Length: 239
Ligand SMILES: [Zn+2]
Ligand SMILES: [Zn+2]
Image 1: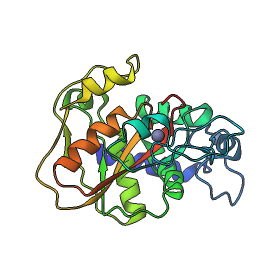
Image 2: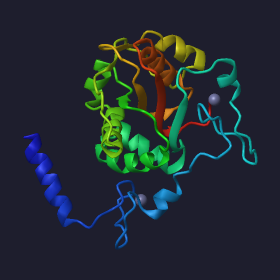
Image 3: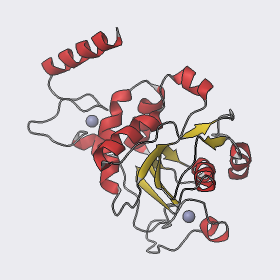
Image 4: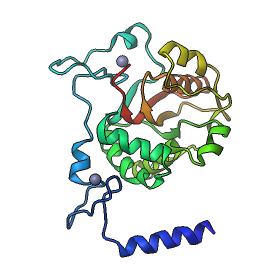
């Protein structure tokens, strides 16, 4: 049945002019970008002035690229974050649609943009941040896996979709402080099997305090990974 539905969706799409997957307005002729110009102008890139590890943006006018206070005092277990942009405006809207409104078709356009920001990548394996089984049942898909699958295709790297698992259900993170998030996530993840010096690109939708990325990286390193870098769509301003 799912195959028939997908086939129907494909057929209908062929009849309609190509449109921006976010605002649904038709693309101008010969448009090759994954979103329209209006939506793209609302995707704000990270400023050059930012922490080289966690990508925390520094205030406008700053030219520094030193490590932020948190990465200096307590270096995270990942070595670098590749963000598509600031978690604001149209990018925030796109992430919400992708994550909560079943707009799974945003995986390809968002991954295409994210892929452009990932340069000098040394990773040999792509790993999505997992959802707990119960959360996966509620949402029916893991947006990080959809993104990771596209990135693996674009980067021609293997995808380890079930390697990292979330075995402990944790409450929603939004209302918690950084310390509470870290405490919650300690021991929430497990690696199925062992790693042998793999360099990993961990993929998630948003990086806020970095607690999830830290917990996942720690687990991957403990299982034998040599290094973890992180790719996310949105980098939130609070660190
Ligand atoms: Zn648009
Ligand atoms: Zn930092």
